[in-house]
Amino acid sequence: MAASSSLPVVIWALLLLLLVEAFAPATAAAAASPSKRPAHQPPLFPELDHFTFTPNSSHLFSQKYLLNDTFWRRKPNAGPLFVYTGNEGEIEWFTTNTGFMFDIAPDFGALLVFIEELDHFTFTPNSSRVFSHKYLLNETFWRRKPTAGPLFVYTGNEGDIEWFTTNTGFMFDIAPQFGALLVFIEHRFYGESQPFGNDSSQSPDTLGYLTSTQALADFAVLITSLKQNLSAVDAPVVVFGGSYGGKVNNVVVFWLLFLVLASWFRLKYPHVAMGALASSAPILQFDDISSWSGFDDTVTQDFKSESLNCYSVIKAVWDVLDDRGSNETGLLELSKTFRTCKTVHSADSLTNFLYTAFTYTAMTDYPTPANFLQNLPAYPVKEMCKIIDSFPAGADVVEKAFAAASLYYNYTGDQKCFQVEGGDDPHGLSGWGWQACTEMVMPMAVSNESMFPPFGFSYEERSKGCLANYGVRPRMHWITTEYGGHKIDKVLKRFGSNIIFSNGMRDPWSRGGVLKNISSSIIALVTEKGAHHLDFRSATKDDPDWVVEQRRQEIEIIHGWIDQYNKDIAQM
Image 1 (cartoon, helix red, strand yellow):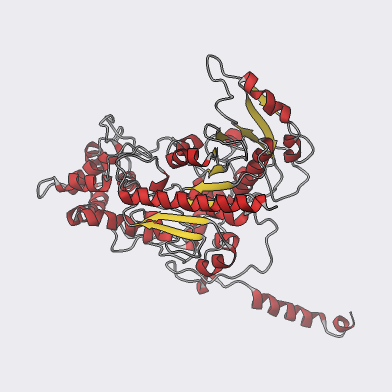
Image 2 (cartoon, rainbow, N blue to C red):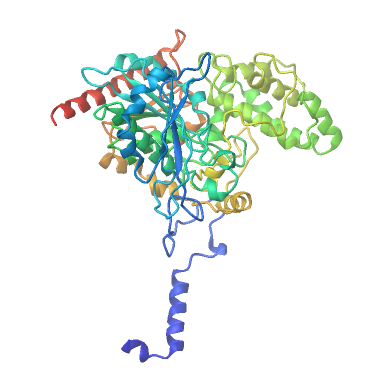
């Protein structure tokens, strides 16, 4: 106090002003150009809540456990729901002391439900809201004696859990040889796991609980509780993941999530999961770690490798679409060419229609027929280019591009017209826009060499768009702060273990993946002709040798993890 009394008040005010100016963030004028990543400056003061994007972090949710289709009687009448109404304590404690419900469920053909916290990170006076969280469990192959077999857990991503379950045949294929219990957990705010019911996506007050950290905590709580309920606390857990999200400014809004979540879960909860297989996980698609144009450059290369003419036609179609769609007459003509159910109001919808077809086909360029996103033949990129190349010289590029896209949308020939504007969300992906506007900020651009129109990325523009759409601004570099990514080879070598990163180089997401071994236990399995999590699909008699070999290596590595784990447990 003596020091303060010896200086005039105005002097202290000037000193305070100088300090504020010295530590103030850079002005907009000093910011980097839109195509460059701005320097990462830590905030002057830390945020109160790093995990929840809401004004108040104060709700809880009920977690619905679909605990075995064998127990739940569906016909002739659906079996009962046995619901444990949560109370004033930790739900794990009450669940582990309510074995009676699990004992009698088979007799009643019952579906079990118990309650779990919505917010795992914030303690507030209002902790009373609940939500249903869905998971699927298959005990068909599970070995219970002499020791419990492993739990193979699929960390759900941005869509209905049934959808991904039916497209992850690899886990079912290998479960018998491991005696594994299969668990597929739905990601909060996707599919049926809506914490606030139909209002879940209505405002930041509810969407704020849609974060990767909350989802990982969901998985950890569920796995731990499940092991206790099944008297398998020492059973090893291996998590499997295949992707989260996608693009925002363009049309791809698909599944980076479950792929990155598996590896992040292993790093965040090593005491819960002793290993992870992360297929097509673009954990380096943040900040400036990987090329911003890598996704579209890979799609371009996939098509260019099949036919230079195919590449040239697709590259030329965008300007023609813009020109032809600049007036009502042109839009009417385009609507007829694209066989739209209704006359389109803008050529942008047709641009998205084509872009989606070409990018998703590149992602699912499998060597065998598949129906993951759409019914497609083997090597669909090659088949698309064959269609384009079959047109006579001088044919309209729009007709060529539409014919190729029809392979994706209408391979079966059932579609009489196409709904290109509006439409529904068949796989429950709507929450991704929020995640891309809060924590999952992946800079993505289109280069001049791409077959798509050049497109830049700007952190500033992303922030403005998110504020307008959701009333929030993104934490641009939160993911690399929370999970890492920069110099990942040096970092994970020191503390990580038991992770397989598998990638196929024809998959556009591979450019953001881990493509080299980091250590003897953090392995990169790369196939030059592989597509998006091809290794997770069911084995077929027509699988190429390189796919068979990739899966063989994955199985061998997982066997090694589990054998070592069981040896360690036996010595305890």
